[in-house]
Length: 180
Image 1 (cartoon, helix red, strand yellow):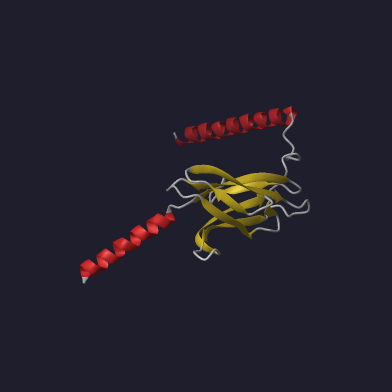
Image 2: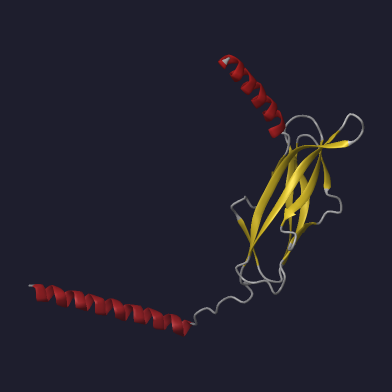
């Protein structure tokens, strides 16, 4: 019985591996990475579809599943032909932050990519699916950064630091003399 269980598990693992390696999605931001944007800013970026295993061309359907309030797939068609042994099929995404967006807001963007497989009777069925996601954090625009210190302020800070160091040294020396 134990040998049969191991055999069934091995067959299932092999069957899953053939599907698991069918295609991939590359994002410029990993799941725990964050894109930084500013209120009123817009960006165009690309996700990339890959089909590096096997010799079968694939059709992949892209769908935005989260974050549509600020982003959209900007390609006119959301079904992509991904030839075998390629790693450069682009999926174009447009992201636009409203100008009145609150600083510190984090938007989760998520996409689902589903393999479309032809059915024997001419229809289309769904194959393997992959998800890709990352977040967008709204921060202060670098066009209006916090004001930098002027040269005079910098000199005053340096002088204050030197005076503080001298006072600390003097107190330390005085205490050392008092202990003797």
